[in-house]
Image (tube, rainbow, N blue to C red; front, side, top):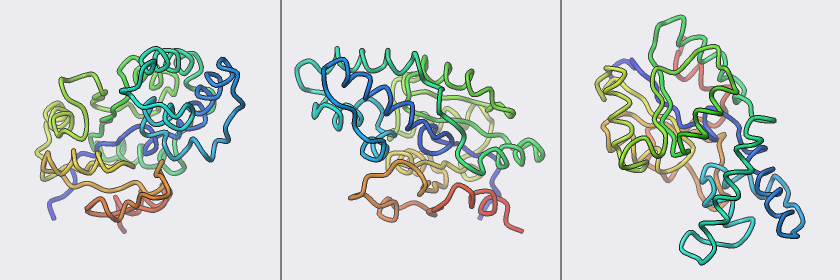
Length: 220
């Protein structure tokens, strides 16, 4: 296998644990509509799906339903006001980023999160190692699972696809990576619904625990 010269991460559910703040925003919105809060355990599995998934669980509403647009805007506004109160890097990710820095290995973020939220979140996290590229859901004309965001990230980093790796906790991350010609690993520690299974995504590898990622990337 060609050596890995660049690593691309999905953001929510892969690099960063944003579920507590996303769930809190959904529950704030439910409170506005005189509904009781839902447990984090119910909302966490859909956190990678953003507003679409969280509103589906919290309000039983789909994107094509009447009233979805205003509800989504209200949710995003609430989330933006409190987007980094409990959000943290997943365990072990700090060490992975330190290894990237020590080896001068380029890395980036390819997310479907809107840019205004992505940028605000990264500013609030103040990562010790900054990504070489950040592609948000509205950076380009298409988002994952289309391969365009992955191809764009690699072009910015100057790394050919055979030497790159995409890591994500959703099937669309694997599809986008493979569509761009890169290896794709499934983040089994991420936000995955019970009826889904990363083993069915045709990923090149499934990493069950974020603490195991460093060893998988840099085997002794």
